[in-house]
Length: 356
Image 1 (cartoon, rainbow, N blue to C red):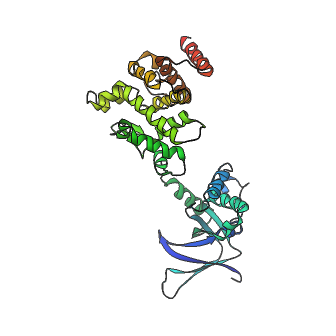
Image 2: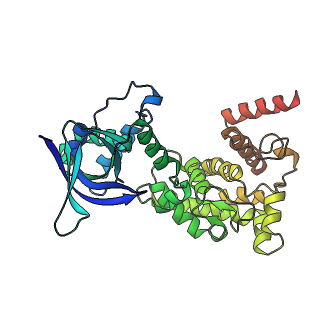
Image 3: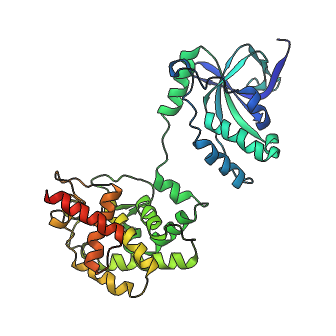
C-alpha cells in the first residue's frame, strides 16, 4: 500500500471477527464516506436510502448545542486493503493503515454523517472535532447489509416517556415532570419510563400522555413559571373532581375495575383534558367552579355518550385526534363551555354520521 489513511485504534473481537474503533476528525467524514449510492436500487445498497427531512433536524441539534452535543459511533465496512499495526506495549492498541484506494461503506449512521457535513458548512470549527468509528472488514454486499440489519433490528428504541423524563433541553418536558410531581394522584400512578402499560400495571398513566396533553394546553405559548403554576392548578382541580380517582384513593374501587369499566384513565381522555385545559389557559376565570362539574360526568365505558366517539363498537378505545376532539366536546358541554366553531362543526358532522 503506497498511500494510506492512518487511524489510531483499539482492536476488538466479536463473533470471531476483528474490528477496530478509531477517532476520525469530522472534516474527514466527507472524504471517507462519499454519497455514491443515492440512486442505487435498494437490493444493491448496504444502507437504506437517506431520509433528507431528518438531516436539518440533526444538524440544528449540533449547532444549537455546540458545547454539549453528543453522538454515538458510526459503523463502517472497509472494502479494500488494510492492516493493523499493534503497539509494542499492548497488542490490542495500535494504528490501522487503510489504503487510499479502499472504500468505506457506512453500515450505521448515515443520517448523522449527513447532518455533520451540513453543520460543518455553518460552523467550520466543527471539522477539528472527532467522532468514533467502528471499522469492520468488508465481506461483500450481503455481509454489509446484514451488519446494517443487525445493528438496527436489535436496537432498543427509547420510549417517549423516558426521553421526556431525561430531556433537559425541552422546556415542556421539564415543566411536565415538575407538574406531575406536584399533583399527588397523578404522580403516584404515572409510569415515567414506558409508553404502553400492561393490563396489570401498577400505574394508570404514562409521562408521555401528560406531555402530549400539556402540549395541547400550552400550544405555542412561551413556557414560563406562570404556565407551570397554571398546569399544576389545572391538573390538581381535574384530579380533585373525578369521582373514580378519589374512589381509588379511598380504596373504594380497584385499579383493575377502574381500567376495565371506566374511560377516565385512558390516553384519549387525558389528551381531551388537554383540549379542555387550553380553554381555561385562555379563559382562566372561575376555572375551579367549572371543573367541579367533572364529578357529574358518567365516565363508564358503556355510557352512550362515548359510543363511537371514544369507544368503538367492539369496545376498544379510539385513539385518533378526532376522538380526542369529540371526547373533549362531551367534557366541555358537561362543564357548560360553548364549543368553538370548528368543534361545533365536527360535533354536528359526528351526530349526523351516527344517525344514518
